[in-house]
Length: 264
Image 1 (cartoon, rainbow, N blue to C red):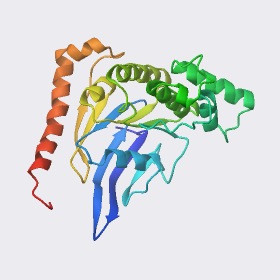
Image 2 (cartoon, rainbow, N blue to C red):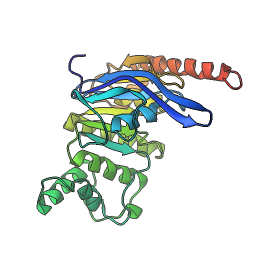
Image 3 (cartoon, rainbow, N blue to C red):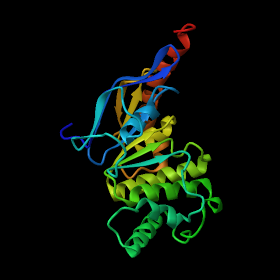
Image 4 (cartoon, rainbow, N blue to C red):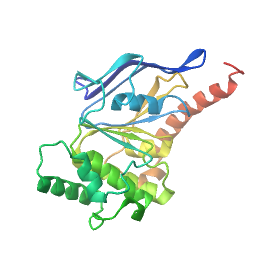
């Protein structure tokens, strides 16, 4: 891949826990191209969220580096938008206020901040809910506000950590459709962490399977299904083959994990 938008090189992350450090990542490397949608999957505790957190600039790696457009990542930045499972909305602000808050510090007038917030709330289907507080919104609607907020300052990369994990099945499906539609309109690079293999295959250009802890890239599966994606694709032989390939790779890691003896 030439001139990747995001380049992750030989990431290692150790946490101090008692006598011996816990190694969450060891040599994790991955590149994402411009406008590419990539999902990270793997067994629980394999380092998916840790890797995403390092890319977001919320944690520092023990070694290795992350480059965005060739520039090293040393902390959070507006070139990266972040959406996580727990919404992280300010309960005292309206939906519009939560989006506008992300625009503080931008060289925008009050009117421009308002128009930008309304534009992005409309983009995620929340027109008419601008003045609603988070406690007046469903889980799916809260996550729509979080996505609108992350997109409002036009990041080059969108980082998403289990954003739909707390939603019911139908809402989750609707949010997947919404996300892929928004991604197609905005054309930005997305790194998406999920434990749901079906979700990963449905929304992604590429699915990356990580090994057990310490995590590194085990396998990359190219999803060559046509876009826009539709849910009738889930019943196709092509989808089933891709799903099976990803699931088998994770299953191998899960079986290996179960075979480890005590203290190993």
